[in-house]
Each structure stands twice: as structure tokens, then as C-alpha cells.
Length: 238
Image (cartoon, rainbow, N blue to C red):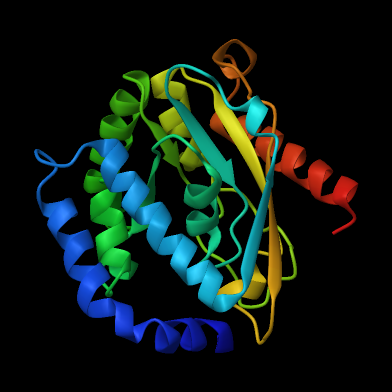
């Protein structure tokens, strides 16, 4: 919490320049390529990290499929989670976010720059459209992040909550690989009372191919992905 306020205050002088630029790129995807828009998001995160003395170390990047789309399913710890993934994931990716949380300043720009999906949690019909749209985009080569826990607790200390089985319907529809991601200490950035330098860790785990999960129910896939992440967290000593 303190870190979030500190980073905002220390970057206020950049706001008149960076926010309009992000808005301009987001509003004109015909003029600015996916790579250009993604690079701008990464640059904004770089500035934020440098100001806030935030270091994010990524491991297992070699596990990411070299071609085609895939779904990434991380444990959820706080506001920094998706920023850390975007910062370390070299090729453009997008994410699904609760619509209610997507319209604040900067969050709105990031969502629009990567053409993220805004999910209305109390609208099942819209949820079906999101599942179908994302599955089709992943099938056509796009990469998405979806947090199967659905939310997070303040200062969660690397604890994992239950995974929602419905989150994995997208993977089943797309027939594309699932990449489990283990996030460590990400909560310390914006969702704790921690102050001072912070190092977070991202572990991209070995993909689970469609051949491995195609005969499973969504509950079984959720349990499998959760167990892979829990196993990695135990292995790192966190």
C-alpha cells in the first residue's frame, strides 16, 4: 500500500506525458502495432519499477512455447502480478480483468494497449462471450493471462487459494498449451505494508499440452495446475 502511493507520487511529473501517449497508442491500433503498444506498456512498468526500487526476476522463459498461442495461469497476489508478467514476457500477451477494476487511471490504459478483456463477473452471458472470444484468439496465436483464483487477499504471504474450474474452459476450447506460473513475493509490491527495495520472482513452468489435459474435467485441470504451482513454491522455499 505504501509502495503504491509512493510510486504514484514519484511519477506524477511524468503523467502529463506518458498517460496521453499511452491513450494515443491505445486508441489507434491501426497506427501502432501490437509490438509497439506492448513495448510502451513495458517501458511504463520499467519507469515504475525503477522509481519504486522494484526488481522482478523471471525464470523458465525457455519453457514458453516458441510458436502459437497459449494460456497462462498464475497464482494471484495483488495489483503487481500482471505487470510483472508483462514486464518479463518478451512477446506481446494480454489478460482478462474484472471490469470494475479496469477503469482507473493507468489500469485503463494498460488494458486497452494490450487489448485486454473486461469481465463482468455477475453477467454469465457476457462471460460465455469472453470465453469464446479468448479461446478463438488463443487458437489464432495470441497469449493470455487469467488468474484462476479470481481474486487475492491483502498481504497473502505467497498462499494459494482454490482455483475456479471455470477458468480452464478457455484452454479446453482453444486446444492450446497451458503455462502454469508461480508468482513469489509479488504481493509485497502494492498489497502489503512493505517499504523499501523489493524483489519479486516469476517462474514460468513447463507447459501442459492439450494432449495431456484433453480428457480431463475442468476441476481436474484446475487441481493439476494448482499442484504444479504449489510444488514450485515449496521448491523455492517460499
